[in-house]
Every structure is written in C-alpha cells, then in structure tokens.
Length: 170
Ligand SMILES: Nc1ccn([C@H]2C[C@H](O)[C@@H](COP(=O)(O)OP(=O)(O)OP(=O)(O)O)O2)c(=O)n1
View 1 (cartoon, helix red, strand yellow):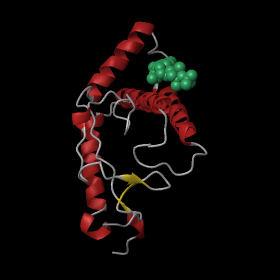
View 2 (cartoon, rainbow, N blue to C red):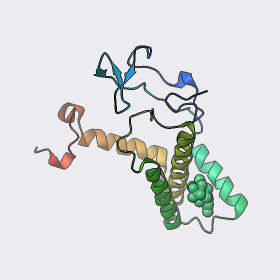
View 3 (cartoon, rainbow, N blue to C red):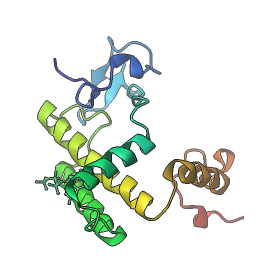
C-alpha cells in the first residue's frame, strides 16, 4: 500500500494521527507539493507517534545491543557524539539538492521514506546512548528545557515571528 504521509513507513497505525483540517477528499497539491484547499494553503494532517518504545526502552535495547557485542569499550561519550553527527550527515544527504521539501514528504518514494526512518533512528539511538553515558535523564531534561523555551518565547509575545529571543527589545 502506498504511504500518504510516511506513517506506514514508520509502522505507525493510521489512528495515531488526527486531522485538524477536516477531510482530505477535497485537498489538492500546489506546485511545491504543499496541501491546498480552494487554492488556500492548509496545514497537513497532524502526525502522532506510537507510544512505545519509550526513551527508556530505546536506552535499554541499545544497552543490550552493545553489551552483546562487547562494544561498550568503544561507546564513550565523544565517540557517540561523533557517530551521532555522522548520522545527522546521512539525514542531510537525503535532503541534499532537493530544494524545499513539503511536510509529509509527498514526493518521496516509499524506499526514500524508509531510508529516512533508518537514518533518523540512528540519530536517536546514538543521542539516547550519549545522554545515558553522560548521565542526562533525557525525558526529564526535555521537560525542563521545554519549560525554559516557553519562558524565553511567550506565545503572546512571539506569535507568528521566528526571531531569536535575543532580538526582542524588552
Ligand atoms: N559501533 C557501532 C556500530 C553500529 N551501531 C548501531 C547504532 C546505529 O543505529 C547503527 C549504525 O550502523 P552503521 O555505522 O553501520 O551506519 P548505517 O546503518 O547508517 O550504515 P551506512 O553508514 O552504510 O548507511 O548501528 C552501534 O551502536 N555501534
């Protein structure tokens, strides 16, 4: 079956995403691949992840993978960082020379989507292991960081603007 927004490629069931734009029947595509309705740009369907595996599941699975291979001796923080950056480069390669890409990757083939799913997973796997080896409790840390982000960028102040917080005057 052809994937329409990459859910199948990632093994995410259809029910995991909910439309915020009404039905997809009357949607058309603009020249750059963005969804349109009556000529107006509309936000593509919201996409939601599966609830599992959790970050802790991923940490544990990768710990098992490295233990089984006696690879912990190679997986020090700096090596993991370099490995992660290398995988980010592989993600970038998939987007290279394509110009802007519309949300949902409407023009990508199934095999390109699967390749992207692999490379993003590599980045996540190394990120989670790097956090573990640096003793950063990533799920908790992300909650703290998002709270800081909300303080730095109050919605009432920055709505619709992509300026960095240092560019605001008060
Ligand atoms: N020393 C290693 C080597 C691999 N992996 C795991 C974590 C990554 O998810 C994946 C990375 O494997 P590769 O280095 O073979 O990279 P790719 O899978 O991206 O292959 P390629 O570089 O051919 O695209 O395997 C690991 O934990 N430790």
